[in-house]
Image (tube, rainbow, N blue to C red; front, top):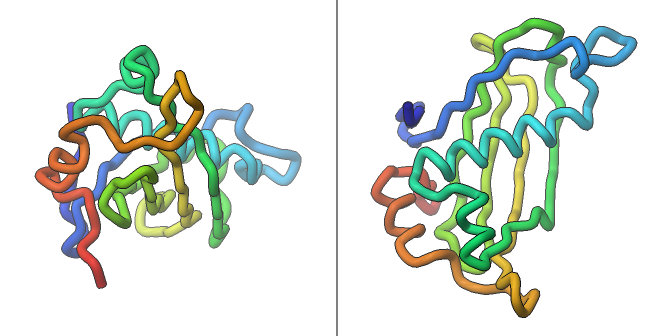
Length: 148
């Protein structure tokens, strides 16, 4: 079931996950590198819920590698907590897909992530435009942040 919610005037995709024991470190916190996997799971589900399945994009010849990942850690997540990853698009898709993600536990903001991916033609290895209709669909859903 698609998980799109208007939160403080911005539509965000909500992906829920539970912290596994394997995600934690000796300090009983989620290991910092694990958040990259959490953000990946969230964006894959956001695209799926909007109508684009990663595997189908790849079969059609479009790759979407991460070229930039910035994470700001505010509070630790702990084993067995139920987390939400809130994701939206910060600029209209071009050859890039720019996302902002927030990892939350209840009312606490734990991590803020900024992710930039590039649409790449699998045959040429060169940047390309997003699939036809993707920008319109993301705009229709309200996932693209309005310019500030």
